[in-house]
Image 1 (tube, rainbow, N blue to C red):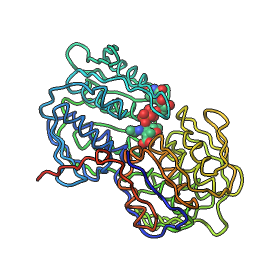
Image 2: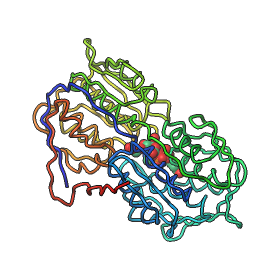
Image 3: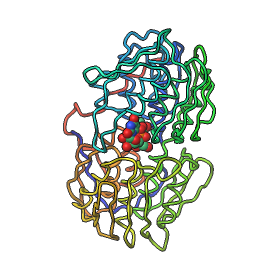
Length: 438
Ligand code: EPZ
């Protein structure tokens, strides 16, 4: 398995370009199953999870052409399989996004129940209960969810109330409702920018979605959807990660091709913690540590538009360098502090007080160490800590970071980081993407 070797202490300086948002590309790729016509997606990030989603689509029978690394032309004209198998779902929970589209277009779907993962049990009970509100028959069969549309093969529009905000649950229901008979209202829907991006794509395909980005989304079902072309929004979490990288190394980064309006709560919190952030233009940010230095500022993760759980680990790394005590409260996942114990090995003074609260005393001098990544965002936080630490940090299991960050070591090296990927074996490399002629 690949490792990163980081020699910390270099202030980063220069320009980084943000890639497309993994958490938008994944549902948008699944949305292509809703039509036999071609859906062309631009700005798809070259990350492992998108390769996995591509493999799932091809296993279902869709054709995925990749004329260049970040453009996917998906044609689901001859779907022969209507299931997302365990071996794919267990590696990537977002495979459950096949459920809504398969059920909507073909009236049937079989999806392996995703097991838990490092950050929590992550059930899909709300997805299933909501699909039942649209008339789906759902039953469990030896670890798989088997769903069927009611007789006649089409879901029926209806009122869906999510008891908790669920991002992929909202996405699954949004896609399912586009082909349902009648109108669907999704209440307590997720408001993330990725939901809005998916709705934009669906409307280009001929769907009738209104209210995406608010807590109530209305979908008027249509008979069929067509092909479309769409550019995936920039990754707001990658953007936030680079904002932290500039501040934690006491450098200055210009961050291009981002969407500052998707990071309102992150920018506000970082500014409160002593990070200077300039919005140079609608797609460019410049970040540096303020002259007065970093200072502790408590944070609580909540659904969008509040501070995102996917930035919690990165923010914790930054607070190890801030003056004072920071209280971190994680309200989304029940086990998302694994990075804390790894940071402690580097000298960080972090105490996990309960399953959802931790405190960070700073500033503490971080020393390089051997650490282990446990999940995507935890691995990003360990890279950030390694960049700030004195000496060498080895990060093991970097396949986690490859899931959601495109070529992060290349981007960081280009702005002065001393980071290299040490390949343990050739099998660990990302498979080459065979680019096919248009
Ligand atoms: C999405 O996961 C993101 N993944 C996650 O990003 C992100 O952390 C999360 O939303 C929260 O913002 C993708 O978009 C592919 P949820 P999702 O359903 O949809 C519980 C990353 O790092 N829940 O909003 O799976 C659940 O256990 C990843 O890119 C149920 O109980 O998250 C969690 O505690 C990590 N039953 C909470 O709700 C359900 O049916 C929020 O989960 C669904 C969810």
